[in-house]
Amino acid sequence: MALDGMETRRFSRNAMRAELLDADTEQELARAWRDRRDEAALHRLVTAYMRLAISMASKFRHYGAPMSDLIQEAGLGLMKAADRFDPDRGVRFSTYAVWWIKASIQDYVMRNWSMVRTGSTSSQKALFFNMRRVQAQLERQARAEGEALDGHQLRERIAHEIGVPVADVAMMQGRLAGADMSLNAQQSGDEEGREWIETLADDSEQAAERVADAHDRAALRRWLQGAMAALSTRERYIVAERKLREEPRTLESLGEELGLSKERIRQIEAAAFAKMRRSLESQSREVYQLLA
Image (cartoon, rainbow, N blue to C red; front, top):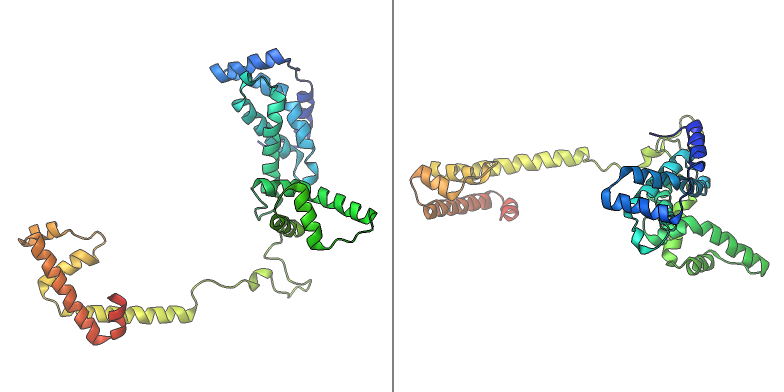
């Protein structure tokens, strides 16, 4: 359940008053959860370090997400850390939990920054959270040295500083440059202005295409009916049972029904198809080539 403003403040105050765990107690609680799935131990461990999760969540406020949502995502990261923590490695839980909390918050921020997915790779995440800071720093340095950087030079330096491909820098600049816009927004301030959705191409089948398709289907149906009419009653039955049913009959089942061998049914079927091909070829070379 989402936290409102008052609940967020109350939750934060309670978290700040939680106990501080020493290393031995922390290890004992972590082992109790890992070995015995002791939920009381997990609750105590997570509660003790919720202040760390809240502190980290507050650092991402300027991305526009509600603080309550950031805290909840930080809490999820803390829970994941507690579930995966190995107390036998000799590191403090807080050191291990920082990575999981930060990753959970960053994933949430990137998911909700735009309707268009901003990025998911490690280089894209590094750019999303560091590019503007690095760009501002590089621009200050260039001004101090009396140097004028064009767009390409700036992207190259950002890529070098963060350690990512230049193409990823250009991609992220484009994604962060514009905000989401409703397709129902008008193209101008005039009340009679068209909405942007009206400029999108219609991918649905057009009237001319529907008419042509209906004409072709009708012609094909006539040709097939004519080809079927040239068959004997037994040949028509076998073709219909083998090719026109939703679940085609097998050669064996037709042989048992008609008192013929499997091989004889196959021969009749092949002869019927040969007759149909000749009939279709005589009616239309085009449809014969289509069905051959």
